[in-house]
Image (cartoon, rainbow, N blue to C red; front, side, top):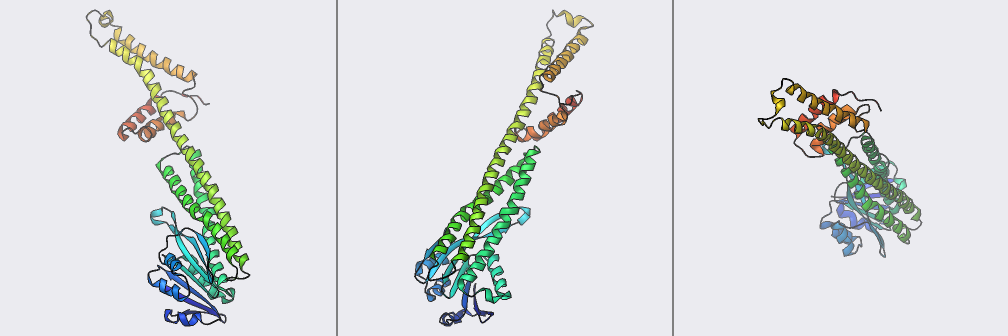
Length: 368
């Protein structure tokens, strides 16, 4: 789709594509050619405007990294706008390439999808056409709207989610949802970092190349370059923050696994001697005097109970059990953590968890 706007005499008019060549010969006013989903036909339009074939090919087939190039009668710039996908409540950030060709009396912008920045810039022109005395002014409106899209994500959207991740990790929550959120936000930040850092340098280079094409407009591009440099610095800070959060997540998972192993070790240490006693008296040899005595069975049970009590006392003295809330944490670790961290069957983890809750609740644990 091709939209041609003419800004002249304090008005913004839409020009039919067939009148483009005639408008190019008119020295008054500014032409803005906005292309959405460029196809092979856009090359002919650019050639009519005096753009070199290889530049027209880059515009027609967008797949170029951010850059700025100087040509005798125009400047070529590649930057990236933002697109937010919130389908199903899963917010994901993607970038859309925006190709810009800046001439002395005209501007061409091209993107494979409709960009909000073009709509915002066009609305600003409709409100006050006087702000676009030159094509560089129109480009400044477009780039300014593009940076305005970046800053909310850098200052609020992603930091808010990073803070939520860190709060959840500090509360001891390290489930699959947290891992997925860290992965998605880190992917968003890396995607932004791949484009913001080079395009800040590209716009800064554009300011230095303004020369005869956009005389006296260097300060406009330096303003955009400075804001993009801030965005690039913030993305690097967020990347480091997310890397730290991921390390914290892994540490939390490892601690949960250690807690599970500690509990299972204690249970094994208590049950193993009982199993030995039960095994000895289950061998059914003929000459075992205790089997014929009326006190044999109660004594065997008493010995088993004493082993359990002694084991729990020893663990309590060593500090392996005890502390306010430990009962619930032990049971929850057995019920939930065993299933996720150790990958045991979910049903078995629930059974062990319920058994652990019954055993732990019968033992009064002190406050730490």
